[in-house]
Amino acid sequence: MNRFWWLINLKRPDKVSEGQPDCCPDLGPDCGIDMMQISTRINFLTPKRFLNGPANYGRTHSALMLAAVLILGAPLVAKANAQNSVPGVSVKTDLSEYRTRGNLPGVSRQTVTTRFLRLAQNRPGSVNHPTGNPPKRTKPKIPAGTFKLIIDLANQPKKDKPPKTRPPKKTAKPKYKPKKKTKSATKKSRKPRRTQTANTPRRSPVGNLPLRREREVVVFLATDRPADLANELAETYQLELLDRYDSIVLEGSLQRYRVSGTGNIDVALNALRNDNRVDVATYNSIFYAQEQSRKYARIEAQYALKKIKLVRAHDISRGRDVKVAVIDSGIDLTHPDISESIVNSYNAVQDSEYRAHPHGTAIAGIISANGEVQGVAPMAKLLAVRAFFTGNKKRPAETSSFILMRGIDWAYDKGARIFNLSFAGPHDPLLKKMLNRISKKDGVLIAAAGNGGIKAGPAYPGAYRNVLAVTAIDEADKLYKMANRGHYVFASAPGVDILVTSPEKKYRFSSGTSLAAAHVSGLVALLRATNPTLSGKEIRRIVEKTSFDLGPKGRDKQFGAGRVDANASLRQMPRTAKK
Image 1 (cartoon, rainbow, N blue to C red):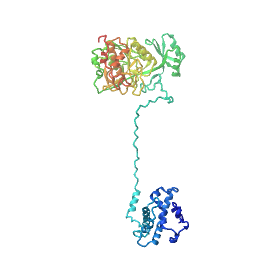
Image 2 (tube, one colour; image 1 turned 30 degrees about the vertical axis):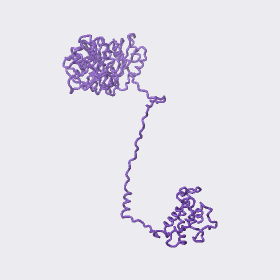
Image 3 (cartoon, rainbow, N blue to C red; image 1 turned 180 degrees about the vertical axis):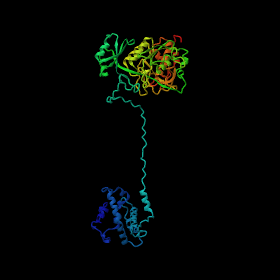
Image 4 (cartoon, rainbow, N blue to C red; image 1 turned 30 degrees about the horizontal axis):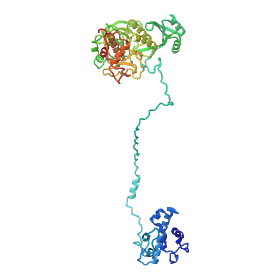
């Protein structure tokens, strides 16, 4: 109790009685404690001072003092009230003496009186309590079934709440354009591209067919070489001389060798290329005719005449007396639609018998037929060159680069300046050299773009710069599904379900880029008949400029410059000869 008394007298230690005992077990007149003294000692418990707390002890000490007053102050008041008052007199009467003492510093008399009245009246067991004895607390009654309801609710599975997603932050657009990133010097270098060599193309232009003759090489020797050099090379490198001829276009001789014994063709070819006496040495490449025959077609017969506008073009030119070389398989020389157009023929294969083949007969009919089938240049003159083997029925007609060059040489010697090359194969340096020389002498070379499909590589000779590679389209101007793609494609022409001539005086429907190339060869014959002085470059420019654009705008890898237009081409050039 003395500790509690010390806490009460913190604010006014000078008012504490010097003879105050250490403890107060009983409250009475001898104790020396007066309730008025207690009231004057706890004036600091006003709301303002309780919140702020004593300056020396903080809020924690103020809370302790308040708890002590609430616990011990009420019994003291009750004891004093029982001794100094009569029944029916309130505590307020006992405080009348306190009111006459005057104001205490910082506390009003009304405030102190109200505090003590609340403390005495609301304390349980006090005489001023409304009931004297407050009712005892009883446990509330729980309705039946409450615990079962709580258990059922607890056993219910929790529903997975969807995760809260915040909306994306809106980024303000920059008021200025960011600077373009410059390539840093530390950027990883890309892998070098695989270069396509002459003999190992990345993708075959003719599918799974072989690209060269087994163990055969072709060697070109210029005219200034010794006459017996061919035999010396055969003895030095263990080669067998199979065939040879003198080329008019190349101005030299071509020798065809076979590697004898167990020799390696690659080793022999490298040795020939390193020999200073040899001008060119290469493989004997294989080329194939580009055609797929059909027994029927549900289209209007010869729709190609309308597609390239031949009816109006024939009013200007019909290709009179222009020689066109058809380097192909054997042509049926007796077919009534083309027999009058063929002026000469040559068997570059040099076998014992001449065989007519559907591919060569169809190409000749598209260029200059004049009967049931109408050709593009019906008055042109054909030089029929048989340069393909046709014995293997499982493969299309095929030939070698050596035979092709011999046939081209013959046609050039006979005066042909337009060459239809409806075949495809790998790159061959000797064939390229021959075609470049013909092009420089105002020769026009037209070749098939290839039937290898969308994944096939460039098909030669169409992929050479001086050759016009033609792809095939159908009646609706759609690209032939088996046609090759590439930047080398020059133009498009009808080549799907074309009505063509066939051996034994027959007709059939056929498709392929070979037939499209034949349409352009006939168009070039019309231009040359109108103006024989036109160079190969001028003809190329006229045909490209007057073609109807297909596919993407401008020249593309699928259709080239577009579908050729014979009428527009003839009307875009000056005419110096009659039709």
